Amino acid sequence: MLDAFLIAGLFEVVMVAGLALLLHLQLGLTRIANFGLVGFWGLGMYAFGVLYIQVDLPFGEPWQFLVCAAFGALVAGLAGLLVGWLIADLDTDGMLVGTLGFASAVLILATTEDDLTGGARGLGGLGFPYDIGSVKDNEFLWLVIATLVVSAIIAFVWRVHRSPYGRLLIAVGGNEPLARSLGKATFRTKIWLFALTSAAMGFLGAMYAVFVRTLETANLGVDITLAVMVGLVLGGSARVWGAVVGTFLSVGLFDIVIQFYLPLPREWYTQAIPVLREAVFGLTLILVLLFRPLGVLGDMRRDTLMGKIHGR
Amino acid sequence: MEFVTQSLVIGLTEHAPLVLAAIGFALLYRLTGLINVAYSETITLGAYFGMWANTSFGLDFYTVLIPAGLLAGLVSVATYLAIFRPAKRRNVGGLEMIIISFGLSILLRHGLQFVFGYPVRFFDVPAPDTIFVLDVGVTSFRLLAVASVAVLSLLLYLFIQRSRYGLQIRALASDENLAQVSGIRPLAVTTMIWFIAGVAGGVAGAFYGVGSSVAPLLGWRQFLFILLVVLVGGTWGFGGVIVIGVITGVALAAMALTFGQVLYAQLALIVAFMVILKVRRNRLTETAKV
Image 1 (cartoon, helix red, strand yellow):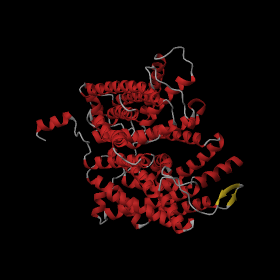
Image 2: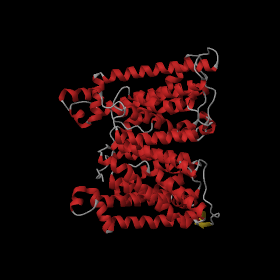
Image 3: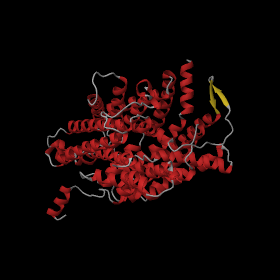
Image 4: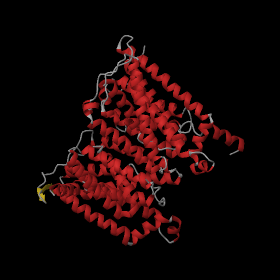
């Protein structure tokens, strides 16, 4: 059995990898610049938590979890539809404002509506939809379930890369006017992709809420957006496995290797290591985009293949 | 009537640094085409440099504006030379450029804690005098902020629109090759833009810092509003940025008074600006990339 801290570290990695895979669809393929990822994830988390705690539902576990998580995903998906409609025909600058503004709005609402969300005090009382023994056992099972969910996302992304739909997304991201001139509904494609991936982010938010059991507005800061973006960019934003590899190299390095396997003084872990983690993540974004813009894994497989065929 | 005067006075005095910061940001955005997320850390660093000069050398608040502005300007130039210029030479795309600036923002925000320490810091200044303007009490620092923002904005506006260097800057922004042919040195002029933008951000940061506290998130908290002001006001040039910045400040104050909650005011403003951007559906006129 794994150490409790290791379970938490691995859960963080799995969560970030799942979000990075979804961001890969948005940013890597379709080139929708989502800088407010935490907003969709956090909205799903809070919608789940509020329904779970504040409303008496007439059924027991695991249905309560499933219904509430579906609600979280639905709310995040609708928000994705709205924000997608707002930004899909704007340039990158407009997308930056739209998604950042949305993330701020979620943070503001989670803080002000404290009758529902608990505000700065936090919203406690969430639990696992099963009980198989100790807290550690429950957490471990939840880690396994989260891993299965993220594996399903990987399988989906893998399918997308090999489907006509994936080629449509790549076309929209690569040259939107061209795709439109060929009769593709680029605006609609972008909106629906954004809504679908936002809903999935909301679902991951609900799963995160179950693991941490208390919702705090501190979770709605820029940290998770940064971790996801570093994972994606470091691994390679054009490749299916980029998000996973990048997350293990960045979040995995800090939250697992440095946290557990390096003999560092205890007092460093309260402030120095978390601050260093963020600073290194920021530096990683700069260095990777300057010196290896396509990340560790490099170009899309199909582009490498085409390059070989055509001798480029 | 009381509500109007209160909104006006509080809005203008409390949010004057926003206008100054927005002008600096607009300078970079309109003249180099770059959305520099790390500009928020230029503001934060201005506050930290001011606080450092104030607490280490005992300089009074009015004097520390000079080192705060100059040092923030130098940091701004350093980020251009070390990161954005190499990135541009490597033909990094627009979206990647924003991600780079986002990474730089995070790096500076957390790196500065290793230099200045983790706890929230404060300026060591005597309590400001309260002066009554239209029956609304305002601290002397805030009045000074309004005065200096007004003067600096005017100077910047005149510099860009009327001076020889301003002409060079605008020439470079609209056609780099042509500007080079006419003998303008892009590196020198671009460096100057980054320096001036940094000074504006640094001074704004010092005003924000003396008004409350100096913390790593100081600039980032303002960034979204700066961005909104510049994107919405920027289409009408620097005058538009100033006007929209002032309107934003007054609107924030008025709504905060109405709702009794600053966060609702911010939320309403975010929504309003998003609607404006959507309605205008602006693919902003392509500015040149310096």
